[in-house]
Amino acid sequence: MFAIFAHGGPMAWLLFAISLIGLGVFIERALSYHRAQIALSDFLKGLRNCIRRNNQVEAISLCDDAPGPVGRVARAAILHNDRSRADIREAIDATAIHEERQLEKNLPILWTVAQAAPLLGLLGTVIGMMKAFHKIQADGRLVTATDLAGGIWEALIATAMGLAVAVPAYVAYQFLLSRKNDLIRDMEICATELMNVFAQVERERRKDEFDLSEP
Image 1 (spheres, rainbow, N blue to C red):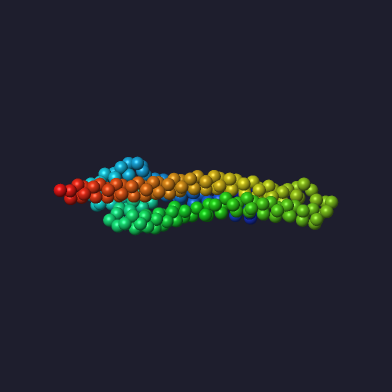
Image 2: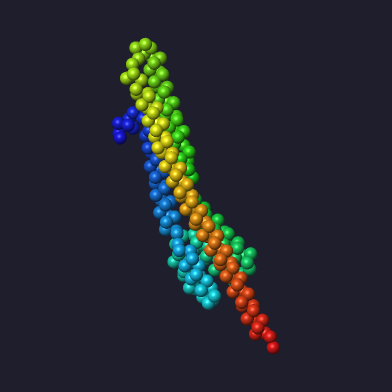
């Protein structure tokens, strides 16, 4: 492996370095998304029961126990459930925007690795071919295949490494993007469900008040 990097020139080492960066980002984001995933249906069922019983303390406790952005969005909604629907939606949107930014953390780095790797590989290819042609120009008819091998080796290794880094980085980015979108969708489902529950509880409360006020 060391011999391959030695033949690949400086671009091979640079590609190896950014591949480690990309790997680190992937591991960090994958673990973060895994920890943030919850059983959404069970979580919403528990919140509905607490809200219908008007037990806000238990509902907030459920949100605090739920890891990830869904629990924090639900917590913001419950803390503002005594306000107007517009205020509740504003609180939910503000929290969701913050959580989405946190979910996107470091993803641009992985995308940059996927985009930059083939370009760096191409640059290494050009540098390697330039070395080969410079050798031809310098030695003229005396040049041998062995003399050209160094530049050609560098060109081919740079190309191969650029693709070897870019393809997994792109696949990893798309995988993480789908996980991020799943969490955002869960936040939207949770927010919509809670808004519906709040509205239903309010309607039931008004109906009970109306029934009591009738002679």
